[in-house]
Image 1 (tube, rainbow, N blue to C red):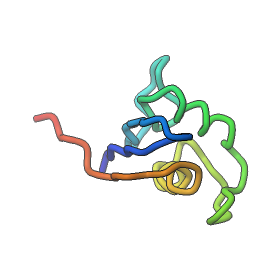
Image 2 (cartoon, rainbow, N blue to C red; image 1 turned 90 degrees about the vertical axis):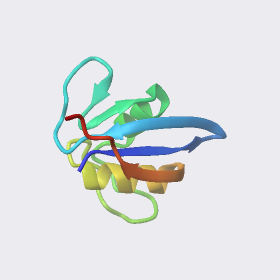
Image 3 (cartoon, one colour; image 1 turned 90 degrees about the horizontal axis):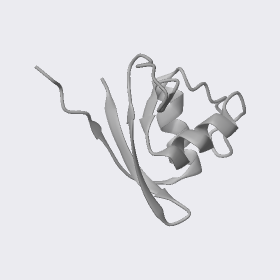
Image 4 (cartoon, rainbow, N blue to C red; image 1 turned 45 degrees about the horizontal axis):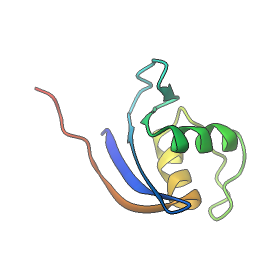
Length: 85
């Protein structure tokens, strides 16, 4: 299930889409597309243990990406992305 994650990084709002599989493209990192600040934060922490959960971030794994955003930012919403029909 693709998800939209919204939150704040140092008081600045961001929104990203976390896909089940990597969509590819210049504006993505792994399974994430959206806010540059969030993508850069994930890129920086990729392969490292997260500070609160201890899980090692893998930007190609949607579950660890969502966990990383929850550990590293102030997440306010995680919701399913609208499905295109």
